[in-house]
Length: 497
Image (cartoon, rainbow, N blue to C red; front, side, top):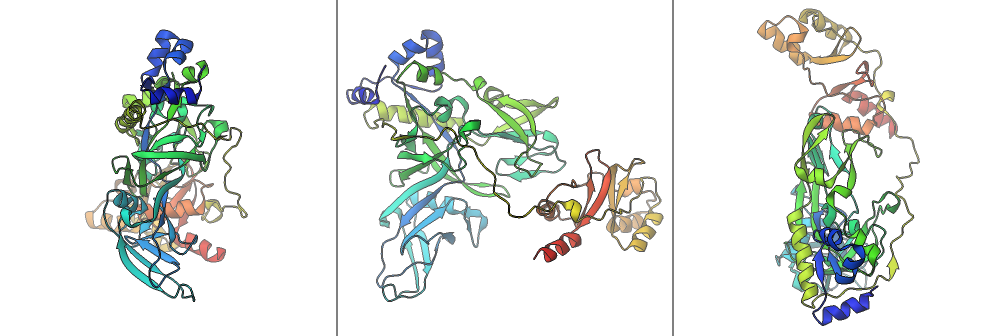
């Protein structure tokens, strides 16, 4: 019905009809997809959320005498320099050597965009044409020859939501997940999300001009982990840092996980025909994702249930009969601002649409890493002959059992062998001081456990996180089938080396 060239001519004349993705569903419901396609020229979309796979290419210019940078740090955050003498790529998730998890590459990018001065330190080996071996100075964005955002994976078509069925708090890239499935975290902006409005990638592709970080940028191809067969497409995007704004390009810290960059992206969807009009009439209730259990450290995490964005945005969702609080890692408010700002640019003739030069791949699937060696499960490391006790056992008897077996913790189990608690030597010492006699009075009932098929690395992390030196291993019915200590894991790592 229309071409992008025709829409651009209407933009030039100030006659283009632009609506946001939140307005389009009502228009299609009222007038039908064909009539809506005739009347509406552009649908604007928006998203603003944590996009870890982001970074910036920077060119510092040559010093005198010149240096071939081998290592470079910006505000004490290391950038990759294996591309040229004075070019570097700083990743959003790279951490500061001194400040650690509280400051990273994302903060450096925000500092540059905000006009702040950034310290630059570099070291190198000496050559005839690059004799200098070190340099220390400071730079601002205006001092750089080129500075452009180049993000390998942004703007997921959909995001799975996350919950946690374990007894302990989890800190993940999906935020803090409370135990017992008490909360559900999610990302994305539902019906406002760019690729939700172009689900078959009819108009978004290589060369599409977009709103990026408060400036203008382009889609430069599919993003990494692009998975269109399961409707998890991603985009790789590029744009000049000059002209961007910290309002739409903001550093963040995810607790006990690391740094990330919040990126604002808005993509105009040209309404060329009835099909596109129908696709842009999607509502939050139509956008469905799975809630995954992040307490399972696997690629194929168990699915708790399917849910739509209308429910997620409501603030609570039913998880196995319990109302769990929902929280978004994306901002709908900022996404709406982006869609509105993009619409203003188009209506004022400051933003023109571009034809895609190449379509996004539509038949690829995300593959896990090829493993050359099998990942060892904790069942290979654990002690199978476990010394256990019952809740009504006398403290003195259990103390003697610990001494006899040379151990400092004993799982407390039921008659069927199911885990009920755990007692340590320190608990026994306290019981002696307070006069308590039964194990059930002193045991810890909330026990950190492992399953036999959990990877050794995952269990090692669990011991480190909870500051414990042993954990019972239980089967699917909760029966204790083994116990593993920090010493067992250390021995395994030494053998592996």
